[in-house]
Length: 287
Image (tube, rainbow, N blue to C red):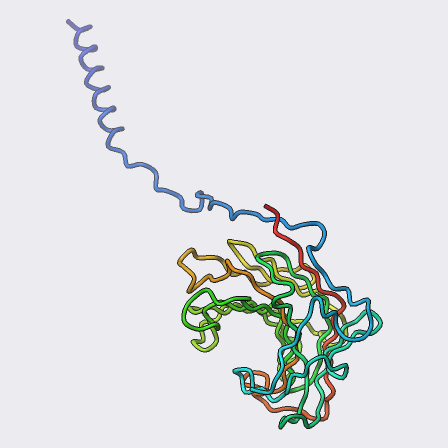
């Protein structure tokens, strides 16, 4: 009888413990333990798919470069007239392309400059773009290294619907502050929603630096001398945010004044202003 009692008591205890264990709440989930799925890594060709090392003196290579020409203000109330194939505004010498903004009267404008473009000659979809450059100093200068869509596939307007990538922009009244920016229909400076990164480059006008973007189907990243300082991710929400699945072309220029570059006026004593380009290299995206 005593043996049966102990057996019965043990069975009751086991049932009690089992019920108690079943009622214990699970450990709270530690969110920090959840590892995000890493972004897909992309790589680029070891050699450029095209490049200009500016080894041939004279005018820029017309198999690569054309010119945007005129003094319309270019949507920004700029003050310069962009000339075509004028050695005074764009020439190659000693392995360097020099784009020069000059103070001179021409076609109703008080400044001349050049805006070189690869549209229709060197258009590309994705890739690594490197430009080694030294920038001009001076209030009122607005040099830029950038890309635009080579065709109009989206929306009602060419810009901003089809996208712009600013690899490097610098405004002279804010010396040493370099900008990388993306413009789309959803994200642009007109709406004050542009996506941008900035980095300090104190010797921007004294030394050459390599300005670069990596453009892939999933992201655009900006670098200076190999240091990443800006990333724009493809949200997957459509062309309004990411129109960058179509070909683009490269632009090199110096604007004078304008809505941004001229916010604090133009120091006329600092002209001519020169943008020096050592090379342009475009690497292809590997499959």
